[in-house]
Image 1 (tube, rainbow, N blue to C red):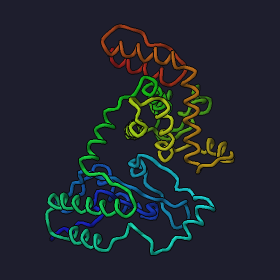
Image 2 (image 1 turned 45 degrees about the horizontal axis):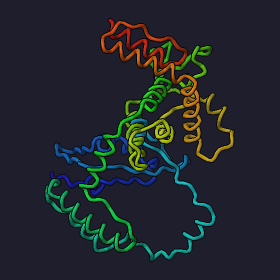
Image 3 (image 1 turned 90 degrees about the horizontal axis):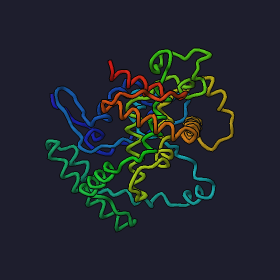
Image 4 (image 1 turned 180 degrees about the horizontal axis):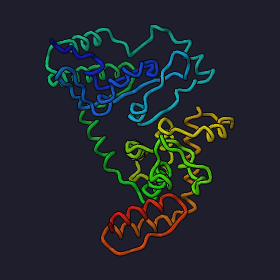
Length: 334
């Protein structure tokens, strides 16, 4: 039996329209592929060297399904494709449907022929790159948009990855992660365990969320904060970069308690509820960080000394981050 790989698997840029109309079984099928770029079937494998996934999702209705949590977590950011407003919408409506510079039948035919050919996948990749660059030259001539070569893309990724986080960005993100993973009673947040009434940490986000932040969250926050700093030509990732990116990396990942949603959903806003709640959460933690900044930096400095082997006592504090620091220092001593 010969495996015929779909265009979706072979192409580095993957777009799923209306992803929440896919049944859960189909969603599960693409998990590993969109996470690591590995696609396996009948002992054959395609490995995407470069890959990115874009998806659109409709607002919930009778025809939509729930996007499974593992797939949701594999998206770095969520944004709303907003209505452009009446004036821009009118201008869009005036454009002729024949005016579509992205369509090019000859290039489409060449891409289809290459993707359907029986050439080994690793041999297709350089040919796909050549076709892409040729199409890029056409777009540059037609609409004035210059694409990036593979070498340019790799160079930019390296530059982005080398941008360091400054002290405030580092400490603020640690505070965020503490509030989204901490549970005093049960050791950490778990979606199957709810905080009891009267918890000492009721005023923090750990009380209002049902699930624990995954390890993909800091990867998304740091990566997109570095990209934003690179785009703005800044030398470091600072607090404002993280604060800007954070709501869009949180919005789709947090499962809020019903009581928190009920309290917030009637408030005036310009964003969908998920993004609005994430922005509100970001500002809550930002306010707490500003109040405790100097003390938190001291606490982290003490923790650093402890990890270097020095006998020190952790600083006491009311925020979950101090309990987490204390647990880690105690773990070193055990």
